[in-house]
Amino acid sequence: MPSYRIWRLKENQIQQFRWAPHTIGATNIKPKDYEEKEVIDAEGAYALWAELKDSPNALRVGDVLESAAGELRIYKYVGFEEARWVLPEVKSGLEAQPLAITTPQQAPPAAG
Image (tube, rainbow, N blue to C red; front, side, top):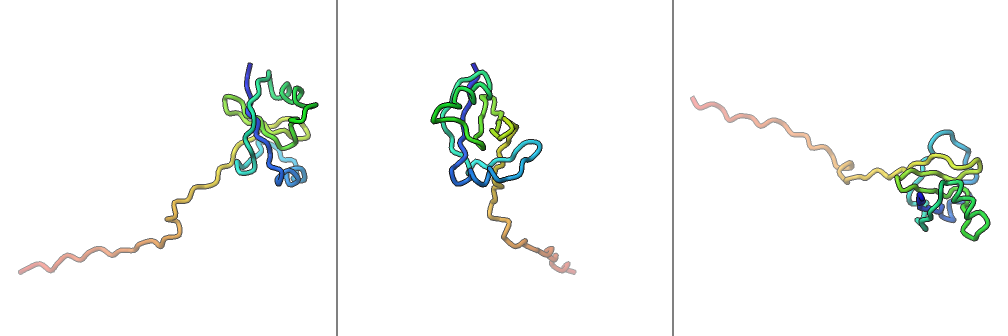
């Protein structure tokens, strides 16, 4: 039976997610907005939703399911849709450094 990791949308992000316009296509999500929770075995995303719907751990709009293969599905008002992590760009710190401009070395005058 497939297993799904549940990523819960953090409390401070719930209202923002609820009022955001519905987007078509994959939803970009940020790891900083989620907390990794339990892993549950279920036949599929909707089976997992049905299993949890009447429990204190019911899925909330904005929660994400991650399959063992790494596929992400975000729970929206219309059902589950594709999602993908958006990772922050890693900066090396060199971006702010000025470029070094050098001039070619002049050859010493020829002896003669």
